Image 1: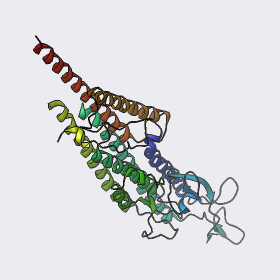
Image 2: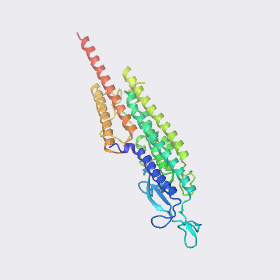
Image 3: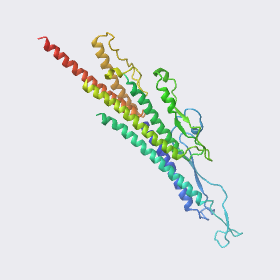
Image 4: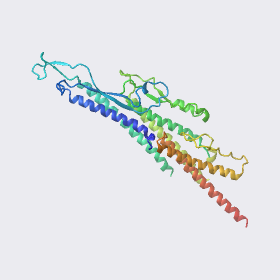
Length: 147
Length: 117
Length: 102
């Protein structure tokens, strides 16, 4: 009920939710940046999120009137398959027969930048939501203004 | 007792402004979506359409939302600049509130006229 | 400039069109006074219906904008106020006239 009237709020909310997921994934990458040994025996493999416009990934690529305004959605959390960097450390418990340790393919600097981007985006979506709330409240206030 | 002409225009502009907020929110939500291209409401088209009579206006039922072709893409093809969207948000919010007050003022004037005649 | 002269026969916006909305009788066409009043009452009634319909659409979840609903409600209120005002004046005019006959 009254759903469509507040659709703009849903759009911003989708942005907030998506950036939250990204922040969690990034935080997890950072926490495991030095995990040379996970349950599977492999080093920790970096994870990343994929975003797409909500309501169909082709919406952003179409020409002409674009009525699909539904915000964003996380379409998946996938493994980053880039190679594990090798570091020479013969004394390390996880060193291989050549004395090399495989490290997680996480570059903390990049993760920090991602975190910053996600945070900025989160705040922008929040501002949008707050503006929308203001606009709707002022619209309703007109009825009181006119008495 | 039919539609007040000035109020009809204000309502159209308010609808356009409400739509712009949706579009900018959508842009912001997709700031980090690869390949996403920013969009905006074509206000110029709406304003020029205001003078048209009601019957000719019916012709374009499509939403007046257009791709912004001037926006620079980043490496992943995304053309959203959060700062730009935020400033558009501020501008549009003021636009909406101004239009709203103008409409309310119109109605207030009528209220006064009814009370006094 | 009276309120009535500002009104035109442009359609109502917001995607809400009441069925059979008649245009107001033009001023000074020589139509009878009672048909003028009747047309006026009908359009006030229709405006109320439009506002109601608008609210129902919103509750059902149709794509209705808040500002459209608010402004339609405000206009319906105004129409009602005008109608009440006109009615009061008609009544006091009638009372004037009945007093004069004696």
